[in-house]
Image 1 (cartoon, rainbow, N blue to C red):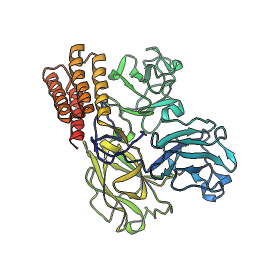
Image 2 (cartoon, rainbow, N blue to C red):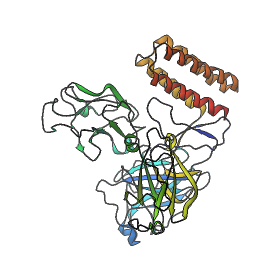
Image 3 (tube, rainbow, N blue to C red):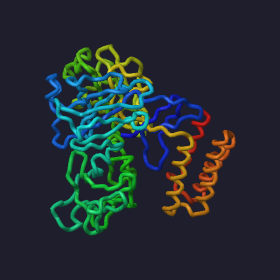
Image 4 (cartoon, rainbow, N blue to C red):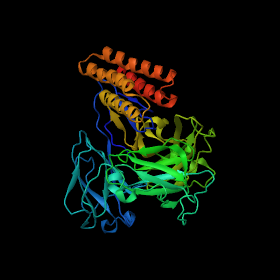
Length: 465
């Protein structure tokens, strides 16, 4: 999950980098800052035992004692339970008071406090999403830092991952690892790749220890000298603690739903009453009516999609998507009762393919997860600068070509700093024109050039507001 700062006037962005980027907003110039509505506190217990909150006895479960800028404070004998669930562990969501800057908390079960026993706090305006781990007094700003490893998932349509018991690297699909993020104990020789940690319903997966979440994990999936898909690949743990790979595809997916072209919607009601989805009568349960983006489209109001599964948060709906879908149109309903009411549209470019929604949510800000990452226009331009520098470092552009683009991008930032919006727009348009020339001349591959053009185009749209 990503950190957020949400702005009320923003442009939703589906592509800024050369790999898919979700939960990203570029704020239009002149936009006013709006604080997050919820903070999310993730909590991992290595033993998986979070207790039973349904007893109502605070000695029976791990919960949060809250004070400070939370909208609803807790009494010591009535902590807030961790009622969300994701790949990391459990999480709780905290509705924030307006202009919240200090949420104070203690994780406890009865009178036993986790961590070092001292009071803890965080500023949700800076980090509205934090990660905790049992027995650890630290408060982490990313999942990868909290758990100390990343996970690489790999799917093959043939389901064949080789003989993992073999000592010959020709007999199994392994992971060649290097990079500044990778723990030295995990670095591999080509003929001694890291074997999969396990096989699950997606495919093979590797848990890789890291030492610096801000640096890239470099890797190649290979069997003998056969690489899949071929080029060296990398990702940054601070951005993604888990990635998903499809055999033969160069794209690195940040979510399983993106890798499988499936939308996943988690839904929570405080009363825990979701009805009986085994019933044939749509008046007996909460279901999901879908249309645009769904495959096949479910057009019958009287026959909504039933939950695929349930977890502690509530029902989990999974919806197959048409190829190239940009959004999923849906309504949660029980009979003719809708929650929250209006038609809803899950924009994959903004929120990704997996979301968590509460009963009675604000239709304009419908999800507690994922949190949105917001960039100001200068920050967004700096991200494009980083991508150009990466293209030069990788040899896709030479030094002169890179400098020509960087000069225009940096001048655009200077023009904005001086309040010269028209000048900044001219510089950004010049970047698009030059990238287009690089593509037509065969200097930049179409996917690389178009990613830059799309990113700069979104920035121009944000400036124009």
